[in-house]
Amino acid sequence: MTGQPNIVLLCFECAPSGLFPSVSEEGPHDEWLRSLALDGLRFSRAYTNSPGTLESLASLWTGLWPAAHGVTCESPTRLLIVPTLPTRLSNVGYKTVGICPETELARRADIVQGLQECIAPRWRDRVVERVRAFGRAVAARRAVGGAPRSLWVNFTFFRWLDRTSQPLPFFAWLFYPVKHPEKSETSNLFRCDAPMCSNAARHVRDVVRALQTRGLWDTTILVVTALRGAVGSVEADLDPLAEELVRVPLFIRLPEPAPRGFVVEEFCQLSDVSPTLVYRAGGVWEENESRGRVLIRGNRATPGPACAVVEEYRGSMGSPVGGQRRRLLRTNQFRFVWRSDEAVKLYEAQAPGEQRDMALEQPQTVASLRAQLFAWLARQVDGSALELLPSETKNILARKGES
Image 1 (cartoon, one colour):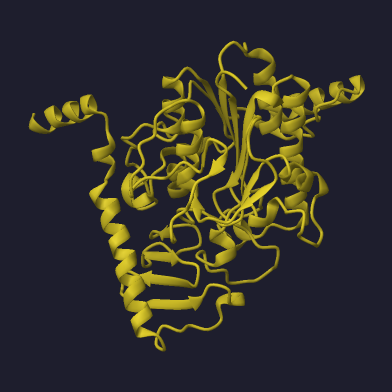
Image 2 (spheres, one colour):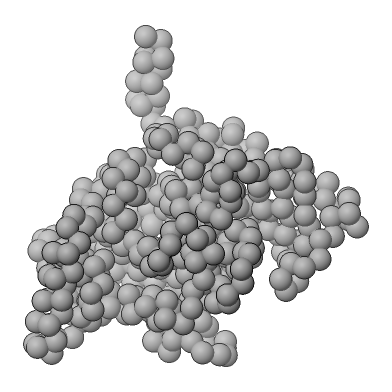
């Protein structure tokens, strides 16, 4: 392939980490997703940066952990002062669009900065009627490419593809929020039953078919991920830092020549998505310990870190407002949870249900993991967002501070 690829990023608010099954996995899986998995790379040990929507989305957008970018539910009005993924892609010649049915999220200027176009619903009744009319028209023509079936996000993306010119490469971010009756019932955000998985598969399938019928599939990077994991059971009390909820799906399909059909077992997080896409688009990403890494260089997956860190803030999804901050350190062997009142928990990483806390039995392990976690946090502070700004922006901020 020559030239810059198009990029389509499908971002679910909540989806199980096993959304894309491997060939060897048994059980009830969507066969179409199984076949698509053979066309790309599935990262089996991908983790969110935070169980909070705002924190994790900002990490996805910037390649930074929440401790570095600082946009959290504790400081929701704080603006991102670092270039976002759309900004970086715009700088190397991309046309950028975001399609987000969450109006409040779409209105955050800092989250959508860099997007040349951010599309959010204005009059839902009119949109629904237009979707239904469009679906009937598509069905009548027996067109291939996937009727949207009242899926506003996909419908809007298809319309955008048809009306946009194609000389420039494009980046499209499609956000799929969880559909549930009560936003306040946090457990609903973490459950992903069979119909939800089926809907997610249909979303992906329709987007892929739309790209194929428009002749764009062979030149497009497809990324599918989620801000949080999910479980299929009906457990009442779900810890937002439970393994099933911090582990997220991550699938990357690259145009040829590229590795295909592999399962990558290195640790990675949502903050690694932006560096990877910037690199594949021809941009420059300088890696250090306070930033995400490029997951695929050339035709090889890059080595991962020794651990993943998940940050939970007061008021994060599933955490009561005014509660304690928590940090999860996930290594190959352990899951270590530190709380801001110095309470800790230690679990075997492979233990089902995290039923046995070994913190009192293994104080030396706790001390070692705590030191590892705090060394990681110190690197995020040392590499704070301000230090990552372009020099001209730093000078402007300095002059404002002096005045």
